[in-house]
Image 1 (cartoon, rainbow, N blue to C red):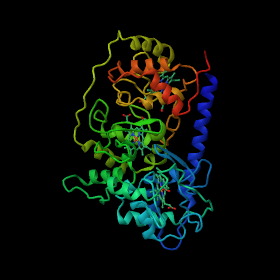
Image 2 (cartoon, rainbow, N blue to C red):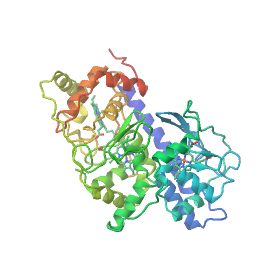
Image 3 (cartoon, helix red, strand yellow):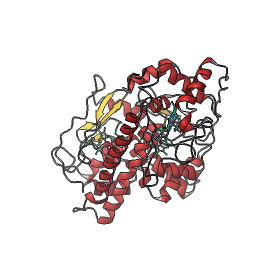
Image 4 (cartoon, protein in one colour):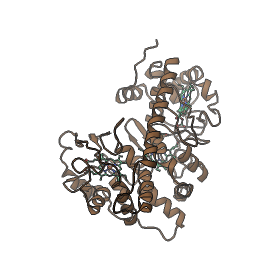
Length: 422
Ligand code: HEC
Ligand code: HEC
Ligand code: HEC
């Protein structure tokens, strides 16, 4: 237990350190070169943070923007490219129109890009913003680092397949402000649909990785489930106020939940650095979405075998922090009561959190993120399935049971520890 806690603490410090160096770089690293004015470069720097370019284009321990980060997709591994101004291995010899085509249309001078690079969202970036972004990207010091981006297996390694994919799934329309909505809601829509690319993770995908019409209604990714953000109180953000959304995107925690996994990265690298006005705009946009009705299942009865076993295990393993009612501890341990993420139809994130533990978000607004220890080494698949089934069907929640086989599959997929304790 102590070793696990120590490891969690160390991980948190290391990540804090990396984050700090990245932010220091963003703040001081680049200087205006010929072309862009200082003001343009400054605006471009902010847009690059909103677009989270640094996080994807930097390998762990690697130089900023020099590429090399492996992204796991359902089709195989795609590695991010070097987008520093190196002429041989980066994009130093590119022109602005070439940059614009790659970022907004997924077409580099010599190849089609895969949508792991979120051009399907960036197509919404305005002309002015793309020139400011370019002005900033050009100031990034050259780093010579050759990256092989395409490590996909046949047939996905054939880039021209993307011509067909783009025809089927890529909506190339530019962002069009809706005159019936306020300027604030339009600004929020612009950020969410474009640079912040929230739908890349949160919109339900089809078998080919394309967006379905279930916009922001939740999807699985890399052992996680990015939950429903639509306006309903059971699985979505219907019960969150605009301020709850702002607080979450700035601090990583609020009175309903605390972020983990890929969302923590998004908050740490991108949203916490947005201006108050932009965060308010994003919140106003989500609150303006139409109400959505979801079918709420009947919770399993307390006499159910999994429920009874889960309730006992919860008391032993979890209640010290989450307390017996699941209410947690304000500003430290998130509540599990009426928690839309706990009600998600797909339990992947919950299984992931229990198997591997989770580092709390470390943000300026929440500098000492609390962490949850891992239980993968300690609890068997059926014990975890029972505890999660219990949480999902008590404390004001209702969701399908979790099976031991779901936990077993996840344990393999995310390479979590096997039980070593007993
Ligand atoms: C979710 C991860 C992700 C984010 C966020 C991201 N990129 Fe990318 N980007 C990639 C990947 C992966 C590739 C390589 C795709 C390929 O080879 O098909 C790529 C490729 C590119 C290329 C083409 C480079 C070349 O040599 O062909 C450019 C330019 C680029 N990105 C710019 C940006 C900018 C600017 C941003 C921020 C606005 C950004 N990217 C954000 C993942 C990302
Ligand atoms: C890289 C993928 C990714 C991106 C991009 C992303 N999210 Fe998430 N998000 C997730 C995952 C995975 C979770 C579930 C883990 C968790 O609860 O922290 C999540 C959780 C959330 C939650 C918590 C919901 C709940 O019911 O607890 C909110 C709110 C949220 N995201 C909003 C956003 C918004 C707004 C954006 C765009 C600014 C965004 N996300 C971009 C992956 C992503
Ligand atoms: C040492 C204290 C501690 C213990 C013990 C603990 N947790 Fe947690 N748990 C936390 C903290 C802190 C968080 C928030 C982490 C973060 O910020 O990402 C959390 C988050 C969660 C979440 C995500 C909630 C959300 O809103 O996204 C779930 C689900 C959860 N815990 C379930 C459990 C279960 C099940 C157990 C028992 C097997 C357990 N926890 C034991 C401290 C604990």
